[in-house]
Image 1 (cartoon, rainbow, N blue to C red):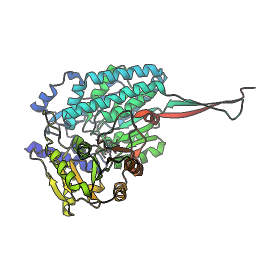
Image 2 (cartoon, protein in one colour):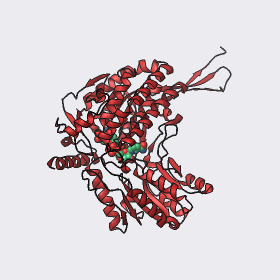
Image 3 (cartoon, rainbow, N blue to C red):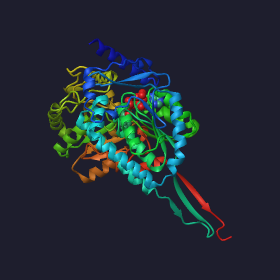
Length: 527
Ligand code: NAP
């Protein structure tokens, strides 16, 4: 009990630190204690060599230079799963040098050679999918089945970009005078710093590293302090696949120090970030000094609009998937469910029945579909949003409180009669809370949906084809799901409008983020 309280207190301090964008040393008071439960869970790994507890710099597994470590905990139990190095500026500087020195040789390899390495990496990820999924569930909390889904999704980016590596075509431009020939070459941007969040410990990395390596860039990955183990295991498989030492480095620990090192280096030519809008803005500002190319995948505030003419079953199934995946902790999770008056009661009842069936628990337990939230501060945020909504007139249809399992489990929740003034509609709740906002007309729904600085994903449910087009075009979002709650795929461009980010990941467009265009003019050809 005492340990749980200490754990909760440490998490609170850590999250306060995160909000201040500053380093919180209290989380880094390391204990090398690993409970017997954690040991038993780790023993389920088929390839125990995948559990790495060192960073990867220049192809070598290294500790932090001052010997400090940081705990990785299982959010479902509070158990310490591993201690990983708490790295900072010096380790990151070395990783940058290594990536810089490797860039020349890696980018000079033929596209086909790079493609083969990536393909092999893909094959290794797939053949180790159970182990990777286990690590994801242990450090992130999502149910094992969902973690397996993430491994397939994450691996797909490596496969897709292994193929795209061979299709980075330039252009020949018709010249403006007969003695000139004009060409456009596409070349890798150089060393890339990739900073990723905890909610998809594998996929947010492969979405960046796949295209970067495919076109010849080299990378320093900084995974979240909460989920470094999946990143390290994936990097180990990359080495086994023949991706050369130095082409892929992994550092973790003191995020602001690592970030500063990446931002200040003139050798790092690109920052690619997935995470909160607050940190994204900071990285964008920090990139200005060295004028780096920047890609940002930031927070959302997804509207999910259910019209009177929707197919009720499709709308319930889609909203459930869009809202409750990863216990509501995805950037594309439905944050506001707008329901037209004529279908409101029927939809609320049907959704309630569906949500009542969601089994909450440790993601390793068969049948569990809702894991814990990532930490105590995440639960406190959900509590604050729910209290704010109910104090302003919303009613709790289901849940609305911490789960009896304790730890960071929260009951899957539905709130009725929510309006746009409530916190739950204005900000990303990032938890298992479905707020229902009644509306009257299509125009009103579009206005409410667009009334936010975020612009990542939106969903609409309607059987009308004209309405599908009208509303899809009117929504100020980067992704729109029509009668679909799960729309992410490696073959389509993923990214946001407004303050949800810059650039796109996945698809044929995703590789452009790692390329520079070079115009070559050959003149005096008739001389
Ligand atoms: P976060 O707090 O912004 O952290 C993201 C990453 O940035 C972590 O690796 C974190 O390191 C690092 N970081 C924090 N402060 C930093 C600094 N000053 N300099 C450099 N790096 C720093 O976000 P999160 O809580 O992990 O993730 C949740 C957020 O990600 C949500 O807003 C969600 O919407 C967004 N997200 C967006 C997408 C998308 O594609 N648009 C996808 C997934 C998630 P530490 O963890 O080590 O502190």
